[in-house]
Length: 208
Image 1 (cartoon, rainbow, N blue to C red):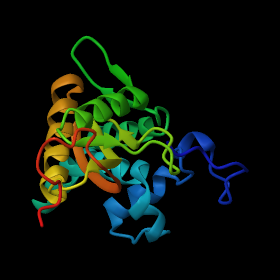
Image 2: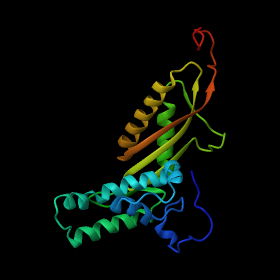
Image 3: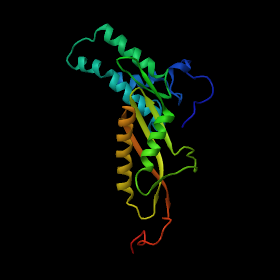
Image 4: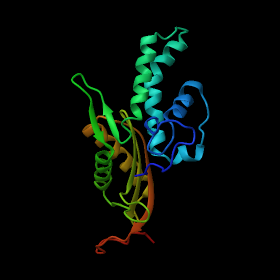
């Protein structure tokens, strides 16, 4: 998991209004509402926190966009409710926030990470790539009901990597929806190692 950068915000904004990666929530809101480009495109492409928050902000802002498309002015109450939800994102940066009729449910990102790891490991011929700069085997970005997973795997030598990656994505999506009720925006699979199968009684893993 990425840690929060040290030091005071350069633009003077409160740390409460920032994601764990240090990016102000207002920057992402401006991308959605005004079509502004990202301040740091390279960071955003690699940051699970930013990508999950963008997806959540788009979902939150969609009622306003729908009214604008119909040339209807959004009522003040709707705008206030939307902005309150956006502000709430930076107050729960390491948790999903699932609203319900009897209260909100918060799920820690480390729980989502564990679900993703177990889902990936349930795919045959797949293992987590621990070490090699990946302490947990996965990076998780979460905002509201949206989650982004970057997972680092090893596969058995001879396994069809594209098919394996698709199976991992599908299984992670299904597990996170089933167990946490979350919308998975992205599952980015990186294969960083191959392993020779422990038993060699079967056919050669690489056909000649």
